[in-house]
Image 1 (tube, one colour):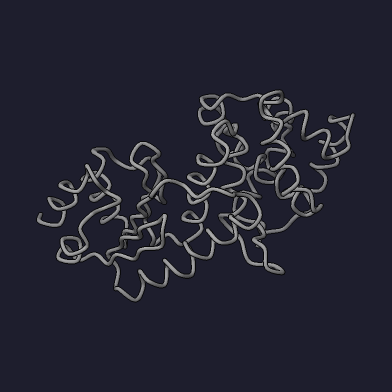
Image 2 (tube, one colour):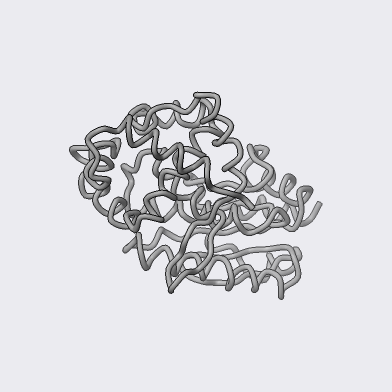
Length: 265
């Protein structure tokens, strides 16, 4: 298939992929440094994703959380599941681990099945910013922040996470008494976070950050946890300080009651 052959030939230099060759393969290229958006939908659709999602989210994230831009990142937007599966294999030699999209730090690329919506794209955009600004960020916070903004909107000029599909599973886990303590969540290694109860970990991290956001504490927490990382690598002690809590078991009970009252949609 000519398109896949061209993509495979670009593997060694994805951020600088020749526009003419990509255009010949049916792709539209939009440059929004440090991001290069490459998509196989119509040119109008690709430009709309670039402007309304990538440019908007990057601007919002810079405003509140990140000072430095990532190294050049290519954002591959594939129009449907078939295109996503085939082209991800051609580019990186392996099948996607998710039907939605992912970030590969090794190749400085975001790879998306954009037919599933723009939420995953915003989520994954968080990760290269975290890598550039907070390389020691614990997995729970990195994924919690990405998950928070996978359903988001602009509110008074700032990005704001909204309730989303992760809520129902978290509420079920709370009712079943299966949600770990915040000490345990924040102490997870990357392997533990991703391998053990992935859905609950993502949702618990998301709705902890959602709570901080709704209390006006999220930006402060992120800045302080980054500054305190050498002495508080998990972020737990900083969480206690920002919340003003000594009794974290009591806080978790109140947080769980708060989450059970949330609604989506």
